[in-house]
Amino acid sequence: MKYKPSREEAWELLKRHNQNDALIKHALAVEAVMAHFAELLGEDVEKWRVIGLIHDLDYEKYPEKHCHKTREMLEEEGWPEEYIRAIQSHGYGICTDVEPVEKMEQVLYAIDELTGLINATVLMRPGKSILDLTSKSVKKKWKQKGFAAGVNREIIEDGIQRLGMEKDQLIEETIKGMQLVAEEIGLKGEH
Ligand SMILES: [Fe+2]
Ligand SMILES: [Fe+2]
Image (cartoon, rainbow, N blue to C red; front, side):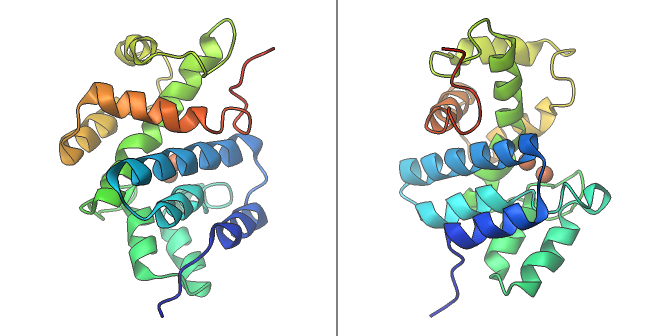
């Protein structure tokens, strides 16, 4: 049988190469959202989860070689090409020319930046909780160009086009996925 990396292995690998708390929380957020979408679409939850968790593996140590160093690292670990390709495709148009064509790739590509926008939106709220966040608040912040300016809205739009999903639905489901790990990603509020 083909080697299938486990969540445990992905976590161990992530922790071996990343210390930055914000990056680890981002990885956990993307993991949860990928798992949530896999469930929604009837796909392989474990596979999508692992890809979400590991997608920025090289970013802390090799930001200038983002997505390329991850390929080297994962090849060394014997990871399947399918996983590596999916991870590389999240940098399409920015640091790679690997186009997101598989569903799994398109979801990752669309939600990666979106989790950043949602995170920033929650941190601006008085209660700092994602548990009662609506997509309406996120859309409002989406339109404010100066807000979380590092979040590339065009990529999310492109991802939405590729997926053929409504923008509202993508935002709502991404929020739901992040809510599942609200505590772990520090967005449970100040209660
Ligand atoms: Fe990335
Ligand atoms: Fe990312």
